[in-house]
Length: 464
Image 1 (cartoon, one colour):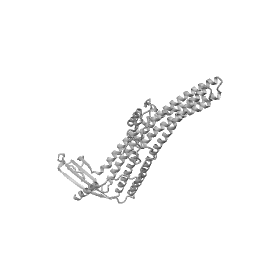
Image 2: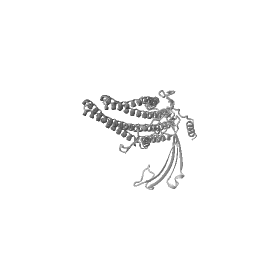
Image 3: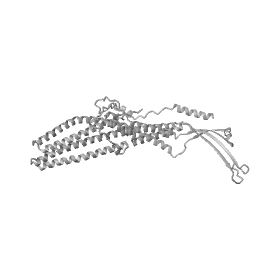
Image 4: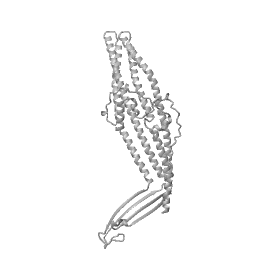
């Protein structure tokens, strides 16, 4: 018994002296600064980033998505699965204790009985009661069970980071779909306005044609332009409905239950966003943290596979009691202490192959971890580059729109006065509509570029 206790004490000592695994090293050196960032931003808080766009309806849609999204609920269920798996993996680190209580009655129904029976013709019925309490424990000499627990905990962390990634993707999608729906509403308003303009010009051409001062060609050209504008209106309406359908899907609701408020697209603004430095991205993006956690789990799995190739020592202790009469059950006590040693001898290379598989899996996840870091850097650079380019485009596009409106007004007045031909009016109409439509598209692209930057930076999430 003293030898068994010595083995148990050694096992506990090994567990106490174990050091936690160090975080995986990607081997990638982050750049000192972002290439596309011209000037640092004043805003440093990305928590609840969607509130920075100044749209209360968007805030309500975001909260509805967090509450009702089926994808997010499924991600939460996966986290609970990982929590249960972590409990299962950590259970072998402590002894397993079981208890049993049995009552038996043996009765000879007919005949004289035989040697294997406790009953015979003279004593036809026997009652027997027993109770037992047993504990078994496998010593974790090689750290395999501890590594299995660490692997499960790392997998749990990865599932939590995955849930954060799902939420970030969901909320970004809601913001993009909502802003797209608003922009299409604005494009529809512009299309209807230009249709009215084209119809007024057509009325003018028709009047001039009836008076003999306009040709049939001019009349047909303007009618063609009116028809093109009429075709554009239902096209934009269709696109707007599709955007609302996409938004309803993200909200986990049928499209019939989604009602957008009368929010104006012009009221949306984009906030200043603090991009920080590239090295901070490793703490800010949940997908990078998930890749790191999976790599840590794979490293622990190698330890598990190696430990399976080594001998195992199992200790057992059982306490039992039995009696023929129930009230005497606790008077006959017996204990049994066991120790066992088992070592793999021949398994046709299975254990070695499992170790090699775990090693190859760790190598795969290391490369995926590195790829996640590089992709994260690229996402931020693309978002910053898009913001800078769109800001420069919008500076000149504002002037383009102003001049297009001025040219159309002048051409329309001159044509009405007979000082300009219809071709000039047609060209200025097309130019004005294109400039108005481009203004909306650039504004939408700028809003969505801010959403993309928030998403690339990990939103308001942080690795704790």
